[in-house]
Image (tube, rainbow, N blue to C red; front, side, top):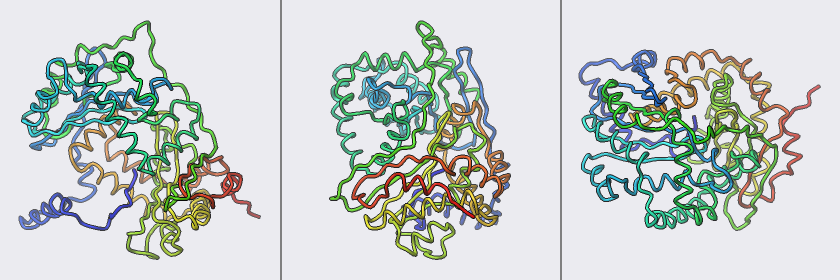
Length: 478
């Protein structure tokens, strides 16, 4: 899990309404608060049904007045070539511009009249369309999602209109230096492979993608066995299955000429990419090694390791009392404005790294201490470090599933990655089983004496030479 380093210690109005108000009301009624163990045991069961064409339906019923229904598809920029990179993202923009049955105005009216929220996202290995609505409107929500995915109009006029929108969004993304830095990290770490592509694709492709390119992308990847209809909230599984049979039984499971797209291995390359601009106020830098794939048993120990490193923002209180060693150093020595440990996991590989934003005069120091934190994971991690990290990780896992939308997304992601929904109780047991010895062994496997990938943007003159950063990936001890 990734923690956002922006104002985590402040309580906003949403937190007051969603968390504290129900708690105060329960205390007023004399009810005892629910313990962590009770919340794990009380988690609803995920029900799963597969149609004859391979289409999967998964749901968790929580007796709420609202629900989120999402269609998760196993496709993204990793399935694209250099020629059509960005097609999935472009298609996401076209999804809500009308269907063969509902023009754009009618589609928008149908969604707004339900008081619903319709959205979508595209990543490197996954595309998702989802709608949050009242539970009573589930049949209409499933119908609209089915239309959006199966019969989008894709008119030439809409494509030309969205082309300018996509190009403008590409320009806006260039202003998000974190996104730029992490895209560059993928480009150098997985150079020459599809994982090196950005999700949005280059602007040159956005200017020339045609309707035929989009139709070909849909015909190649929108197949029933690669889809999951995930739902959370006030839903009935049998009703959902009946709706899926009505709207998704016709989704094809066959490929033309048996041309089943197979993901080729994406090799990791220790390397660097630098974009120096001394006019920028701050340097954005990421360093990473090859991480574990989503289904690897090493995922949980690496999650604990990242939790030990933690995250930091200059707005944090605490200073020398922060629990993370690297965060304490960052506060005491004024090493950076922010940092965060991350692990981007894909089906067969990943990126395990640290991203930080710092002043140009502190780059060398921050890089030294970031790599030092990695070496500590491989050699000297303690019982107290692991105990603290496990508690933080458990709290993060539970906190991230607060609401029907994140639960819906989690169900779809798990079905695509693991073929099943991993319950919180199982995650808890796997986290609890991690020991300092396991953390040291797993981190040594992935970090110690490995060639890192490095990306840097901004006033980065002080960034050490690559060979120096490579030599800091091991310790010589006598």
